[in-house]
Length: 245
Image (cartoon, rainbow, N blue to C red; front, top):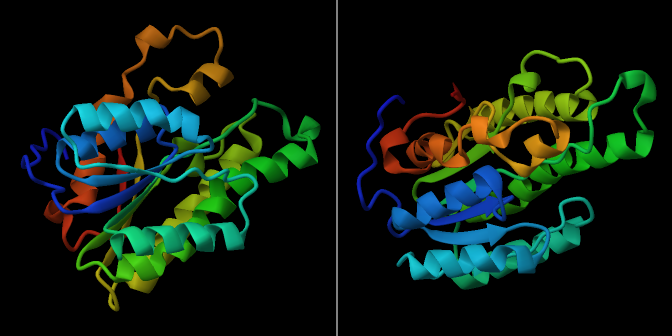
């Protein structure tokens, strides 16, 4: 993946849903996708938070995006089915699904972890991505070459003290990615992969490490080439892979 050079029309004609698009890696991936021709479906908790990104994509000459507000903590299966129905009516298919939404409220010992917060973190980081992916599978199967990309984390491969529910959720996401890759490998045109972007500047990072100087961290834009690679045709036949940056 080092020095990958995407073709200018890499994602032209592709419809790609990005969660967590209001900031951080999600926003960077959406902007990069727009530059390479994708039609973006932008998703985050609040529509208001997505409108500046919508305007930036349009001003930059990207295909007109769509906004799909989803509160991953509270949305139920009916709400997700309605969201899938909207995408179906508007586009008829989905060529890419990128899971960038993430939530971790604090670092804490397991001894002290509040049960309701544990459930909340698992819901946003693991259960909601499962439910959204499940909802989108018919739309992904309607595409000729579809790609699902999960955003992974180093604490999802080796446990780290104080990361609690977020750590457990990311272990689960690794398993979900691998399982879905195996289930779709030989009977569909869907590719399923994951990216561990490492440490980048983001709101989540700032919340967990308030004393850290964000200027010393790489911008989220630094990791977008790997997402572009997995979303585009250059990764044809690649599934079940974990890219660690």
